[in-house]
Structure formats: C-alpha cells, structure tokens
Length: 371
Image (tube, rainbow, N blue to C red):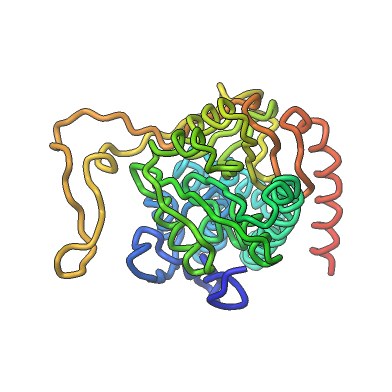
C-alpha cells in the first residue's frame, strides 16, 4: 500500500458538521484541502472536479445531502438538495446510486431525525467504499496470477488510463487497488500511465504511484498502441464510471481506443469497479449519457508559471470550436473481466450475479445499521 503512511492521503473526511476534501484541481502541484460546509459547496466540488472518480463523487454527494439538511430538513429541502446534486455530473452512476440510497433512508423519517441519519448514512457509504476497494485489490491480484507467473520474476507490465486510485475513491482505488496489492505482496510491477488529455488525470496517477514508491512511466495517450505492439505491456486495467447490464463500460474518453488496441494484440483488458457502478437499469452502453464538458478544458492547459504559481496556458483561440466528451464506452466484447468486490466476472455474468449480491449487501448493511 502507499508508503507515505499506513493509509492513503484522505480524499475526503468528515470534520464535525463539515467535510474536508483534497482539492484535486491543484494536484499534482500541491496538496490543498477545502472545507465543504453547505450543499452548494458540495455541488461545486463535484461539478468543478475538485473531487472526481465515480466512487468519490457518490460519497461526496451523500455528504452533500447531510450538509444540506443542517439548515432545514423538511421534504422540500430534501428534494431540492437531491435535485441539485443529481444535476452536477450525468455519467457517473455512483452519484445517482448514493443519492437514491440517501433518499431511501431519509424520506421515511421525520424531519427531526433526518440530519443525524444523513451523516450516519454518508459515513457508511464512505466506509463501505474503502472495504470494496480492498476486496477489488485482492480479486484483481488473483486475476493477475497467470501473468505474474509468466513473467518469471520480471516486473509485471500494466497499463492504465485516467486515475482510478485512492484519489478517485474513499480507499485504495479500483484499477490501482490490484497494483497496490501486488506491490504490497512483493510482486515487481511497472505501470504505463496514460496522460489522459485533456484534463491530464494521468498526472494524478503518476503522482499517486510516486507516493507509493511504485515504478511507473508517464506516456502520451497516442503511445499506448505502439507500446502494446512492441510487447511491452502485459495487461490493461482501468476503472469505470458506469457499467451497463450487458457489461459495456463507460470510462474516461480514450479508454475505448486502449480496449481496441489490447484486443488487436491479444492482451487482457480489465475493468475494476465496485458494484455501485453497475447500472442494471441501463441495457447497454448506447443508453449511457456521455457528459460533454467545457471546450476551455481543451483550449487551455494548466501548469506552473515562472513564479511557481498555478496558471493556464492558451493553446487554442477562444473562438476555436472543439468537441470535449468526458467519457467513451468500451464494449463488453473487449473486456476480459470486470473486477468487483465479489470477484472477477465475465461481463455477461453481471445481471445474474447482481441480485444475490444485493441481497447479501442489504443484509450486511441492515446489520451494520442496527449495531
């Protein structure tokens, strides 16, 4: 696990009646924490990507409900808070999953009972995500076993896209969790980190892996296929923001191209995500809404100026028309396995496995709430 401490640097944590988040718009140039005290603070943090990654977005939204109920906790306030948070990011299903869960717990309660219950449920969502991350790491390491054996002691060469580590979750991450598990088990591993334009979330992955002491190399997005063709990659592992019932997976734009390249070169392509990312109400990837973000994310590049201050450099004129989809969909046929907290599953198995998992989850959650 990350060597900087016994646990990762917390991405969000409760501090009394407010929430502290690690501002990811300031990374990798510096660690800055921001206090969220209101519903509007939470919504802004999600929308502006101060917090990012589907599991972390969901947890932040849950805490956003708790923050909203500090000032009033009647039905009108609860509904307005829910509507405000749902409008922040359309693709990450964990956002809607967490808000649905908060509604199911809070709606039947009296207004007086809701604030305390909201904090308790948000805390539970955060704790459960950390546990899911740990399990994903163990199942992912098991899935890697044949690849590790084939390397005969040489470093396992993995490629990832975007950031799906502890910065994107409440624990050790999704796609990076098996990498941390391998590193902790003494398995030599090297990670090819795709820069992930235009927001360069690969820089967050590189920063995170540096903190953990895991060998890695940052690459331009377009170098991925060449590296696979050269035999320098053993497998690709990515996270997901929404997984459809048929196993199609939406993740950061550029993931689909890596899936195609992996298939062309006979490499396993894994998707790692908690079950809260699976959306059985969505039949296929064709129905997943794809967020299109501001063109200025494309026209401007952030970095440090000559004085070491965070700044933006314009690479395109303001009038230049651009297309900036935040996500794409990798078809299930390109995915070797979807690694969740319950194991590594073929994409076509999800619909059959989910009901049993929901029953077990609900029983465990109910027991936790009664203890």
